[in-house]
Image 1 (cartoon, one colour):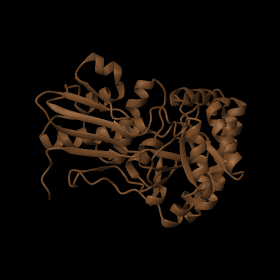
Image 2 (image 1 turned 30 degrees about the horizontal axis):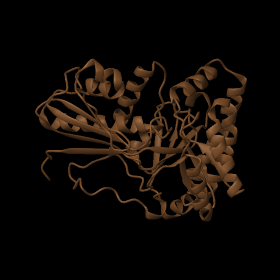
Image 3 (image 1 turned 90 degrees about the vertical axis):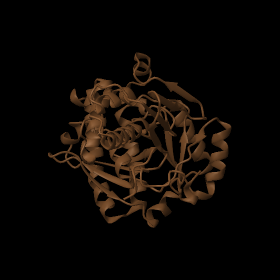
Length: 363
């Protein structure tokens, strides 16, 4: 076995969702039998680097290359980055961060609806646990992927003061394409690798950022509360979505990927009935832009909606025109890869070698 490294690197990817967002908010998944969630890891890595240092230091790498340097044992850091602070505090059993340099980075833009903060939480928790185990530092034991998902999900719920879902975490841990169902004994996750047949279908997919950050907690809480209040509009939409969930399960196990993409369009048309806040002026503008260039194109907003990233499904030969028109309007194409990498640490890897992106699907 290779020796434990002086520098530990852990990486987890973000996700897009094809159906069933919101059912992962307990207990909604148990209120609508047959419902399911289908998502896919798309890279856009959240990355954590741990190394010894003369004093405790936390470096936050921002998109564009800007870096912030913090003392992680201060109130100022807690106020600025409560999720990172709370994970470190909880893993280390309320002890201060020792003489470590922790560097965190997430390529996914904040508020994009791609689960970047949860992916970063998964990577950070795993890194801190591995490092503490090796160096004999007291820490909270986290054994297995379910415990890891529950740990980060529960910390998020504590900070949000409301229920938090689990789909982002499972995509980060497992990679690939994931079907989540909700039996009484808790979420069950089935993962498949990104096969050549699936990758062929995904050549139709672009990922654009609307430029407007969304707050998933706000939209999730609105739908959650209206579900608990038995709002007729929400309950009707969720019942229809749960019905489609059964079809998604069948198609997933049969690996009928083209039919899954077609059904996802139908799912999004129903999902928009949950709330008028799922779409924004910008996301609707992206939809019109794409349809003007390709009448067969369709879009769906990622995550809880209200802005952020937008999936575009369009004919591949129309992609250059769509990307050019989107850029002119200030919409950003997000550079994703479809290797579907699961959570991994580089303690046994050459950290200078990044995961290889699928060349045809890397914008």
